[in-house]
Image 1 (cartoon, rainbow, N blue to C red):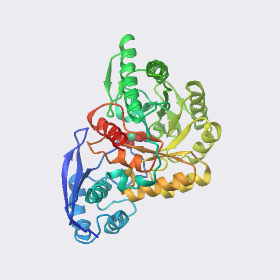
Image 2 (cartoon, rainbow, N blue to C red):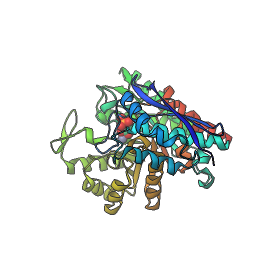
Image 3 (tube, rainbow, N blue to C red):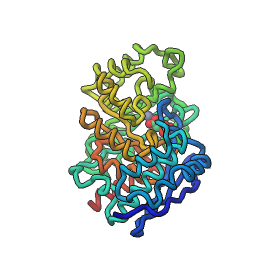
Image 4 (tube, protein in one colour):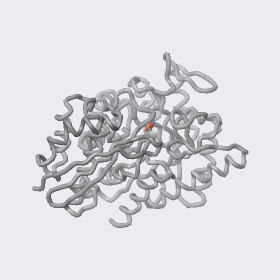
Length: 398
Ligand code: PGA
Ligand code: ZN
C-alpha cells in the first residue's frame, strides 16, 4: 500500500476574490492530487468552521500534516479523514478549519485516484453507481445574500428533468440563463450577476417566477424535452424575530408554508430548498406532508451535510432531500456517510457547490460516484462551467 508522502497548502483566490485554501497531496508511487475549498455566503448556523485561510493553513500545518505525511495510506480515504478529525479534536473543525480539512481530504482522494490511474468518480465508488448521471440545477435568477438588490428568494433554478443526457441538460440551463436575460431586456430591466452567475434584477419575486416559467417553457420547446424549475429560498436569511421578511410583506411560519405550497402547485416546482429556517423541523415536516409527493423538499442549512441533523430529520419526516456540501462538514467521508444515510431512507441527495468557488471539479465526480439525482453548480461562469464541463467529459468518456 502506498503512503502519502507530502502535503502542501497554499492560499489561492476564490471567485469572489477572497483567499481560500488549496492542498497538494503527493504519494510514494508518484500519485498527485490538488483540490481547493469553496466558501459560502449564506452559511448555515450548524456548519463546520471556516477559518481565515492563513490561520487554517498554519493550524493544519502544525496539527494535521505531521500525522498524515508518511503515516497514512493514500487509497484509504476513511483513515485519511479520521486522521484529520483526530488532529482537530473538535466536532466542527474549529481548530484546523473545515477549509483546510476539506481541501486535504479532496486532494488526497484525487491523489488516490491518480495513483490507480482511475478517474476520481471511479475511485470514489463509481463501479457500483449504475448508469444514471445527475441532472444539473442551473441558477438563472438570484438574490438574497448572493446579490444586493436582487430577489428575496436566493435562487431560481432551472431543472431540465427531461434531458436525455448531461450535456443536453447543461446546455439547456445555459439557454434558460440566456432566455431570462432576453426577457429582462424586452421588459427594459437591467441586471447584474449574482455570486453564482445568476441574473439579479431588482424585481419582485412574483415577477421572477413569471420570467422563469416563460424562459423554461421557451427553451423546453426549443430543445424538445421537459424543463421545470425550482428554488432555494435560503429562508434562514429571511427569518428574524419569528417571521419571514420579504421586501413587500412579512409571513408567519404558517403563512410561509402556505406560500411555498401554493408556489409548488402554481409553477409545478420540482425542487424547494430551505423553504423554512434552519431550526424549524416542524415547519419542514408540515410542508413535506403537504407537497412532498409533488416536489423535493431539500434541507441545506437545516441538515448542513451532518448525519446527526439528518437523523433527526428522518425521524421526523422533515424533508425528502438533503443538500450535500463537503465543506459544510469537512471531509469526503462525512459527505459520503450523509449520502448513504439519505439514500437508505429515501432522501434524494443533491450535491452542491458554494457561492464562493474555485476551478475545483471534485463535486462533479462526487455526484457521479454517488449516483445523486441532482447537482447544483450554477449555469455559467468559469468556476461553475469547470464542474459542468467535467460532467460532460465524464459522461462522454465513460
Ligand atoms: P452559499 O449558498 O454557498 O452562499 O451558502 C448556497 C446555498 O445556499 O445553497
Ligand atoms: Zn441553499
